[in-house]
Image (cartoon, rainbow, N blue to C red):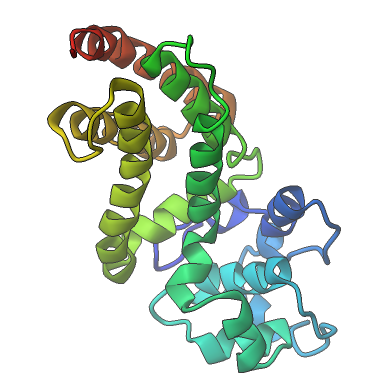
Length: 241
Protein backbone atom coordinates (compact mmCIF):
# COMPACT_ATOMS: atom_id res chain seq x y z
CA UNK A 1 0.00 0.00 0.00
CA UNK A 2 1.40 3.41 -0.89
CA UNK A 3 0.73 7.00 0.08
CA UNK A 4 0.27 9.92 -2.24
CA UNK A 5 4.04 10.44 -2.34
CA UNK A 6 4.51 6.90 -3.61
CA UNK A 7 6.00 5.64 -0.34
CA UNK A 8 5.18 2.18 0.91
CA UNK A 9 3.97 2.61 4.45
CA UNK A 10 4.60 -0.93 5.58
CA UNK A 11 8.27 -0.79 4.52
CA UNK A 12 9.25 1.73 7.18
CA UNK A 13 10.13 1.49 10.84
CA UNK A 14 11.44 4.96 11.53
CA UNK A 15 11.69 4.62 15.29
CA UNK A 16 14.10 1.70 15.07
CA UNK A 17 16.21 3.44 12.44
CA UNK A 18 16.39 6.68 14.39
CA UNK A 19 17.36 4.71 17.48
CA UNK A 20 20.18 3.16 15.45
CA UNK A 21 21.43 6.56 14.30
CA UNK A 22 21.33 8.16 17.73
CA UNK A 23 21.97 5.13 19.89
CA UNK A 24 18.84 5.82 21.92
CA UNK A 25 15.58 4.08 22.73
CA UNK A 26 12.45 5.83 21.49
CA UNK A 27 8.71 5.19 21.58
CA UNK A 28 7.71 2.74 18.88
CA UNK A 29 6.40 4.26 15.66
CA UNK A 30 3.08 3.10 14.27
CA UNK A 31 4.37 3.34 10.71
CA UNK A 32 4.88 -0.35 10.23
CA UNK A 33 1.31 -1.19 11.21
CA UNK A 34 -0.63 1.26 9.05
CA UNK A 35 -2.84 -0.69 6.70
CA UNK A 36 -5.79 1.63 6.40
CA UNK A 37 -8.04 3.93 8.36
CA UNK A 38 -6.97 7.16 9.96
CA UNK A 39 -4.06 5.91 12.02
CA UNK A 40 -2.84 9.46 12.45
CA UNK A 41 -6.00 10.43 14.27
CA UNK A 42 -5.54 7.99 17.14
CA UNK A 43 -2.82 7.89 19.76
CA UNK A 44 -1.35 11.23 18.71
CA UNK A 45 -2.62 13.54 21.40
CA UNK A 46 -1.77 11.06 24.11
CA UNK A 47 1.90 10.95 23.19
CA UNK A 48 4.11 12.45 25.90
CA UNK A 49 5.93 15.62 24.97
CA UNK A 50 9.34 14.97 23.50
CA UNK A 51 12.30 17.18 22.87
CA UNK A 52 14.81 15.08 20.95
CA UNK A 53 15.67 15.58 17.32
CA UNK A 54 15.19 11.87 16.73
CA UNK A 55 11.62 11.79 17.99
CA UNK A 56 10.70 14.83 15.92
CA UNK A 57 11.96 12.92 12.89
CA UNK A 58 9.77 9.95 13.82
CA UNK A 59 6.67 12.13 14.07
CA UNK A 60 7.48 13.95 10.82
CA UNK A 61 8.02 10.80 8.79
CA UNK A 62 4.76 9.34 10.05
CA UNK A 63 3.01 12.43 8.73
CA UNK A 64 4.89 12.49 5.43
CA UNK A 65 3.92 8.89 4.76
CA UNK A 66 0.31 9.42 5.79
CA UNK A 67 -0.39 12.78 4.14
CA UNK A 68 2.48 13.44 1.76
CA UNK A 69 5.40 15.83 2.16
CA UNK A 70 3.82 18.91 0.59
CA UNK A 71 0.59 18.43 2.54
CA UNK A 72 2.39 18.32 5.89
CA UNK A 73 3.20 21.62 7.58
CA UNK A 74 5.69 22.39 10.31
CA UNK A 75 2.76 23.07 12.62
CA UNK A 76 1.44 19.58 11.85
CA UNK A 77 4.82 18.15 12.85
CA UNK A 78 5.16 20.10 16.10
CA UNK A 79 1.61 19.14 17.09
CA UNK A 80 2.25 15.47 16.38
CA UNK A 81 5.59 15.49 18.19
CA UNK A 82 4.25 17.40 21.20
CA UNK A 83 6.81 20.18 20.95
CA UNK A 84 6.80 23.91 20.35
CA UNK A 85 7.65 25.60 17.08
CA UNK A 86 10.70 27.07 18.80
CA UNK A 87 11.93 23.59 19.66
CA UNK A 88 11.46 22.45 16.07
CA UNK A 89 13.63 25.27 14.77
CA UNK A 90 16.23 24.50 17.42
CA UNK A 91 16.78 21.21 15.61
CA UNK A 92 15.94 22.00 11.99
CA UNK A 93 16.05 25.17 9.95
CA UNK A 94 13.14 24.03 7.79
CA UNK A 95 10.88 21.09 6.99
CA UNK A 96 13.23 20.11 4.18
CA UNK A 97 16.21 20.17 6.53
CA UNK A 98 14.49 17.51 8.63
CA UNK A 99 14.29 15.18 5.64
CA UNK A 100 17.85 15.91 4.56
CA UNK A 101 19.42 15.53 8.00
CA UNK A 102 20.63 11.90 7.50
CA UNK A 103 22.11 12.87 4.13
CA UNK A 104 24.02 15.75 5.69
CA UNK A 105 25.32 13.40 8.37
CA UNK A 106 26.58 11.03 5.68
CA UNK A 107 28.30 13.89 3.88
CA UNK A 108 30.10 14.89 7.06
CA UNK A 109 31.02 11.27 7.77
CA UNK A 110 32.51 10.93 4.30
CA UNK A 111 34.55 14.07 4.76
CA UNK A 112 35.85 12.81 8.08
CA UNK A 113 36.76 9.43 6.58
CA UNK A 114 38.91 11.07 3.92
CA UNK A 115 40.77 12.91 6.66
CA UNK A 116 42.03 9.62 8.10
CA UNK A 117 43.20 7.96 4.87
CA UNK A 118 46.86 6.98 4.63
CA UNK A 119 48.68 8.68 1.76
CA UNK A 120 49.76 5.29 0.44
CA UNK A 121 46.18 4.22 -0.28
CA UNK A 122 45.25 4.83 -3.95
CA UNK A 123 42.80 7.68 -4.38
CA UNK A 124 39.95 5.66 -5.89
CA UNK A 125 40.34 2.87 -3.36
CA UNK A 126 40.07 5.40 -0.55
CA UNK A 127 36.96 6.83 -2.16
CA UNK A 128 35.40 3.38 -2.61
CA UNK A 129 35.98 2.40 1.00
CA UNK A 130 34.82 5.76 2.37
CA UNK A 131 31.66 5.81 0.30
CA UNK A 132 30.76 2.19 1.08
CA UNK A 133 31.26 2.77 4.81
CA UNK A 134 29.14 5.91 4.95
CA UNK A 135 26.36 4.49 2.78
CA UNK A 136 26.31 1.26 4.80
CA UNK A 137 25.82 3.25 8.00
CA UNK A 138 22.57 4.68 6.61
CA UNK A 139 21.02 1.60 5.04
CA UNK A 140 18.62 -0.39 7.18
CA UNK A 141 16.57 -3.56 6.91
CA UNK A 142 13.40 -1.70 7.94
CA UNK A 143 13.41 0.32 4.72
CA UNK A 144 13.83 3.86 6.02
CA UNK A 145 16.45 4.63 3.39
CA UNK A 146 14.08 3.56 0.62
CA UNK A 147 11.30 5.69 2.07
CA UNK A 148 13.58 8.71 2.25
CA UNK A 149 14.57 8.35 -1.40
CA UNK A 150 10.95 7.97 -2.47
CA UNK A 151 9.90 11.02 -0.47
CA UNK A 152 12.78 13.04 -1.92
CA UNK A 153 12.12 11.95 -5.48
CA UNK A 154 8.36 12.49 -5.21
CA UNK A 155 8.61 16.11 -4.05
CA UNK A 156 9.50 18.82 -6.61
CA UNK A 157 10.44 21.07 -3.70
CA UNK A 158 12.91 18.54 -2.33
CA UNK A 159 14.25 17.67 -5.78
CA UNK A 160 15.24 21.28 -6.37
CA UNK A 161 17.13 21.36 -3.10
CA UNK A 162 18.59 17.92 -3.70
CA UNK A 163 20.64 19.02 -6.68
CA UNK A 164 22.55 21.47 -4.50
CA UNK A 165 23.04 18.99 -1.67
CA UNK A 166 24.40 16.32 -4.01
CA UNK A 167 26.74 18.95 -5.44
CA UNK A 168 28.11 19.55 -1.95
CA UNK A 169 28.54 15.78 -1.54
CA UNK A 170 30.45 15.49 -4.82
CA UNK A 171 32.64 18.43 -3.81
CA UNK A 172 33.74 16.48 -0.74
CA UNK A 173 35.05 13.82 -3.11
CA UNK A 174 36.56 16.42 -5.45
CA UNK A 175 38.32 18.15 -2.57
CA UNK A 176 39.88 14.87 -1.47
CA UNK A 177 41.08 14.09 -4.99
CA UNK A 178 42.49 17.62 -5.35
CA UNK A 179 44.39 17.30 -2.09
CA UNK A 180 46.07 14.13 -3.33
CA UNK A 181 47.12 15.41 -6.76
CA UNK A 182 47.91 18.98 -5.75
CA UNK A 183 45.30 20.99 -7.60
CA UNK A 184 42.01 22.82 -7.10
CA UNK A 185 38.77 20.92 -6.36
CA UNK A 186 37.18 22.67 -9.34
CA UNK A 187 39.94 21.51 -11.71
CA UNK A 188 38.95 19.04 -14.41
CA UNK A 189 40.12 15.79 -12.84
CA UNK A 190 38.85 16.30 -9.27
CA UNK A 191 35.52 17.73 -10.44
CA UNK A 192 35.02 14.92 -12.94
CA UNK A 193 35.82 12.24 -10.36
CA UNK A 194 33.48 13.79 -7.82
CA UNK A 195 30.66 14.00 -10.34
CA UNK A 196 31.18 10.45 -11.57
CA UNK A 197 31.21 8.94 -8.09
CA UNK A 198 28.12 10.90 -7.08
CA UNK A 199 26.26 9.74 -10.18
CA UNK A 200 27.09 6.11 -9.48
CA UNK A 201 25.99 6.32 -5.84
CA UNK A 202 22.69 7.99 -6.65
CA UNK A 203 21.96 5.62 -9.54
CA UNK A 204 22.61 2.54 -7.41
CA UNK A 205 20.46 3.81 -4.54
CA UNK A 206 17.57 4.63 -6.86
CA UNK A 207 17.84 1.28 -8.57
CA UNK A 208 17.81 -0.37 -5.16
CA UNK A 209 14.48 1.30 -4.47
CA UNK A 210 12.98 0.38 -7.83
CA UNK A 211 14.14 -3.25 -7.69
CA UNK A 212 13.66 -3.42 -4.68
CA UNK A 213 16.92 -4.67 -3.17
CA UNK A 214 18.09 -5.47 0.34
CA UNK A 215 20.80 -3.29 1.94
CA UNK A 216 23.39 -6.02 1.39
CA UNK A 217 22.45 -6.28 -2.29
CA UNK A 218 22.66 -2.51 -2.69
CA UNK A 219 26.08 -2.42 -1.06
CA UNK A 220 27.34 -5.27 -3.24
CA UNK A 221 26.20 -3.49 -6.39
CA UNK A 222 27.66 -0.20 -5.20
CA UNK A 223 30.97 -1.81 -4.29
CA UNK A 224 31.31 -3.47 -7.70
CA UNK A 225 30.29 -0.30 -9.51
CA UNK A 226 32.76 1.86 -7.64
CA UNK A 227 35.51 -0.70 -8.16
CA UNK A 228 34.91 -0.67 -11.92
CA UNK A 229 34.76 3.11 -12.01
CA UNK A 230 37.88 3.33 -9.88
CA UNK A 231 39.83 1.05 -12.20
CA UNK A 232 39.43 3.51 -15.04
CA UNK A 233 39.68 6.75 -13.11
CA UNK A 234 42.74 5.74 -11.09
CA UNK A 235 44.72 5.51 -14.33
CA UNK A 236 43.68 9.04 -15.21
CA UNK A 237 44.61 10.27 -11.74
CA UNK A 238 48.00 8.58 -11.90
CA UNK A 239 48.75 10.34 -15.17
CA UNK A 240 48.51 13.76 -13.54
CA UNK A 241 51.82 15.57 -13.11
